[in-house]
Length: 607
Image (tube, rainbow, N blue to C red; front, side):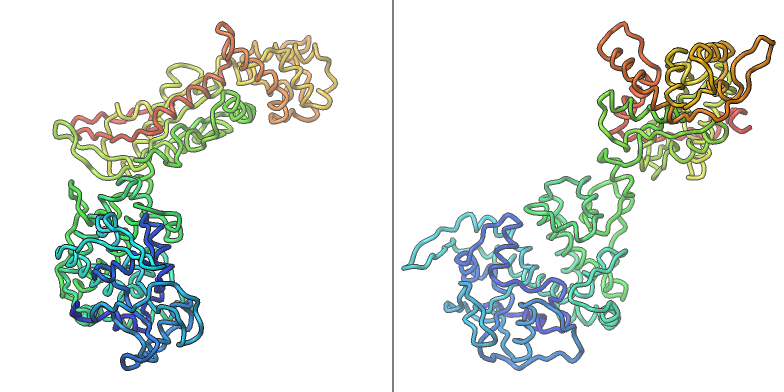
């Protein structure tokens, strides 16, 4: 018989807030929860575990009073499921028994029976705490050795005699279960500091009042649960086991721990066991931290800079990095790997169509298309907001240098523009590229990285220029454009097809944008004189729509014919996709060069 040390299961079950957040489990419910965790239990097995004093029901509701009634002195919520109501009724009428405090009772029935209200029920009255599920992994070896026999119509399970070491371990789990059941109403609802998740409580104010009245020092003394034991159980027994049993590995586990409590209902087997361990450990460690704040225990160590694994790294509340960093490490960051900046409406309309034609799946986390609508300062802001790395912490690098981790993946900026100023010469293109890189450097400086290694940034910006005055001229002949404009514009200003082709040929030859056709008209017999602005301009979106079938045929031809010309937009999209794929599952660090060797920013960048 186990002699209770401190508060018993009945003492805890009699508390006004006890088991409101995780309600007690009847036998069939406990079996169902065990099955979710990969343990195939039945009533015969539970009886045998009880007989061997390995897993004793938390409390028994008896038919007749066995102790003094324990009505709570403070108000409690009237809400609760059937088993919680049964528990409170038994508490108020003195019908709760702690089976761990009395010898094995061979007549205790584990067979389910229909409930008949109120006390003359043939129901077994056995209730388990959900925290008793924590003991199941340590019983795995014994469960694998059980055998079954028939005694008349009854099935009897038998296990070998448990070693004393296992009995001691199970007693320690029961002590832990009693403590968890006693303090869960205080700590479980706000394990996530951003949310309060209450069960069976109609008003959060009631819980706030209970929380204010809760005295951790008094609770620890009443439970007779030494602080060092609390910490040891949380770290060595629960968090260490979670670390070794969690099937998803450390990186996925860190992500799962950030998910809200409601998402845990989808877990099962070892993943659910690991989460159970972490939840229980977090409750105990919050309890321990409250004791430490009141001078009753040593403070937990600071593990933020530790280079080795520590059990506290597996806490639900531990944040060794940011959410962006965790997503990046797993290669599932929602941030794009390539930002494709296009200048005009036509190319922005065509880009996603080209993407799908090439067979690339829809993946906005890979590539993001931005419409510039003109270059100017827009490009620099694109670089600052979308491309500049978000850095994390300093780490040592080779040769004693310093580097910085990158929290989220760095996007590459791929710009495709018309050859207008300043992109009309190689020197102008390089000058603009330098400006963009310096904008990125300025963002890094605000984060504390004063002198990033320039070689680590060069790949972030690439500028492409169409090989004709504008996107339309670079991808379509004058005849194709004339047919497209005719389809997109109701009147084409009264022109014939030949007049439209002649105007397109003129402005192409002059190195001008296609919009001059409807802004200025076509050439006349007089030098530098034009027919004038159209009555209304051509919609670039409608023109893009009309031109798409022509571009589609060119892309399809290029895909199946080796010597067919490749449309430039097809090449840009293809390159953007492959650049994104290269960086999809990679993360890197940014090196910092010593201040005395850092190169000054190019004048073009600070202009």
